[in-house]
Figure (tube, rainbow, N blue to C red):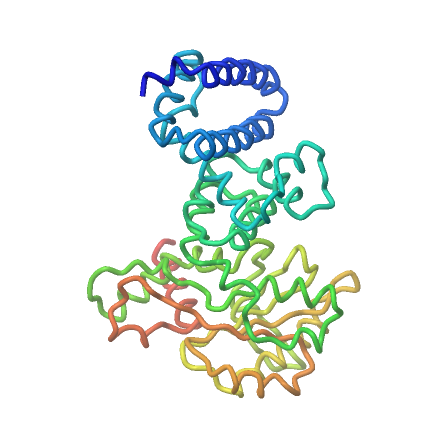
Length: 364
């Protein structure tokens, strides 16, 4: 392999590459991430081209790593492992590109009218190791684009991004059965559908041993904040057991939120049993009640979300058919080691509230 050091084409390329690295160092003070990733992209293209046309093989990356680290010992990112990631990153987003289409040329020209050019601009907005997580955990570029966009929109840390991919957020987002098209304006309907998941993942109930129902209830109370986070970005928590007094009659909404992007109140009802058509009647009362008693002129129509243990999709569709208030129906899923005898023992929101009140009394 050391014979490659005598190859003039290789040594000339290394000399040119070192000059590019120095240029990157100067520019990085102003645009660290974008400049670095642009360099990585071009380096990935170079590596693919050299290996394809010169048949230098994988060991060439080891030599390349040694040469770059020797010249730039203070710069991280030139390990053999990272060079392989750089190559994988370039290949991943080129696998769907037609023969002869050059993404690098699109980027250089900033041709934002091209879909792939827009994608590259998005890629350069997230940190390198976020990109690595995405290409190593996603199977398709369509799935990868979803997580790139969500990372930019929500400012996800790498650990949150990893969790969202591993919980399969891509396949759960916007899949809940709903009547939004018939009950909301087009733009509001599209955004509302994107806020829903189906199923909601309750894997934060990390139970690894058999426990009694009392202990299970306490576990849910301890992890209630993670349940709220599972609803997703944009939900601002208003209250649990929100009190509605209607002409002397009192009712309690399980959970009330305000969604900052929808500019609307969101009523969430929880059911620990399979969906029944009458459940929609309850939400069909709560949603207009919030509209009439809480909503202001600046707010969009209130939305209802029903989360059940399970559902028959056809039954849900029939139940929503003649409902004139916007309602979506999802189910929840627990996949991590929850003992079967207790899967039907999840407490109601009233039981959780009672347990919280008991804990608060003990602490006074």
